Amino acid sequence: MLNTQDILQTVTMIREENLDIRTVTMGISLFDCISDDPARLEQKIYDKITTSAKNLVKVCEELERTYGIAIVNKRISVTPLSYVGAGLSPDGFVKLAKALERAAVELGVNFIGGYSAHVQKGAIKGAVNLIESIPQALTETTRVCSSVNVATTKAGINMDAVKRMGEIIKETAYLTRDNDSIGCAKLVVFANIPEDNPFMAGAVHGMGEPDTVINVGVSGPGVVSAAIKKAGQCDFSTLADTVKKIAFKITRVGQLIAAEAAARLGVPYGIVDLSLAPTPAAGDSVAEILENMGLECTGTHGTTAALALLNDAVKKGGVMASSHVGGLSGAFIPVSEDRGMIAAASKGTLTLEKLEAMTAVCSVGLDMIAIPGDTSAATISGIIADEISIGVVNTKTTAVRVIPVYGKGVGESAEFGGLLGYAPIMPVKSESCEAFINRGGRIPAPIHSLKN
Image 1 (cartoon, rainbow, N blue to C red):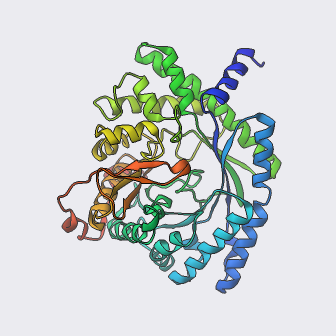
Image 2: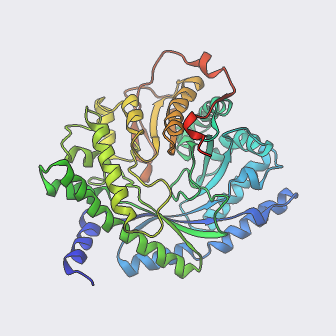
């Protein structure tokens, strides 16, 4: 039975507390597009995407009008292209990226993900060539997003791939240097990549997914922050319960939109991703949630514990509200996309080391972090290796999206625009890890991965 108070609270959440649906993402399989003729492959991919998602934006706009809630992004994820275009050269993959771009522009979607490779235990030729093409592909497109999975708990860490990704990130930063190295904002390195993530830059349509599917990512840091502020100086059990209850309500909105979008598009409903995704807008910050719990500034002592409580409570509340939960599902801590994180990083309270500690208990990893443009490729690889190790050892998804901003250093900032926001350039360690990175090979899987 509908409760008037619940209805009014949801209206307040939408109007005053920045509740929105961050993304409706359609996943599309491209396996039936495979062809040994590169031109034919490009055309089949373009045709499959534009046919499958032809009504995606229209339906999302109808749902916005019907329910009065904003759907901020309409996105597409596709089968990792390293499999679909396994026989292509790097130049051939760049042409595929441009085919994705044309489809995205034609459909009016914000981003398209799946320019991706999985190399956790080794790299097929297609994966090697796709990785080599990433800098050019991301420079010559604006809506294509790329991800590379370099590790899993079962396989360990492919350190050869980690080393190469440090170099790829540097190359991408240089090629997009005229725009604060923004190409790196569309590139993420993963451990334990999920197959149903609706969020960019890491969205892919996994191998075990149906031909097409709808996945939805909810948001609502402002809603959670307001609830905690209203709860006042309660104990931790009450605080956790407060977050659980509000996460339930946020997720119910996501479940509604996911089910309705899938029904109207005539495709299966996949999952709701419970992640709290912030924006640079005032009152839409995960950092503000943590500070409303009692921290003077995010990054101070107690921050990791506060984030652990938040992440756990969001999952407990959200999982009761949706029949299918997946993706990343937790609290995002992207520096450039969160006003509170930006302020804490600018102040120096929030450091790269503290962010790394926080990723042990949050949803994804080191995200949208700007670092000096002269940071070496080996240092970037070291940052990746540290973060990926957290994911592998803890059997969770972690990722790295760092941006070495060409020509800028600590004390300056980078402007990315829109939801990507802006970021202060954060310092990195000056001591070298190059000899460690150059060892090559694989770091073995942890012993607890042997569960068979």
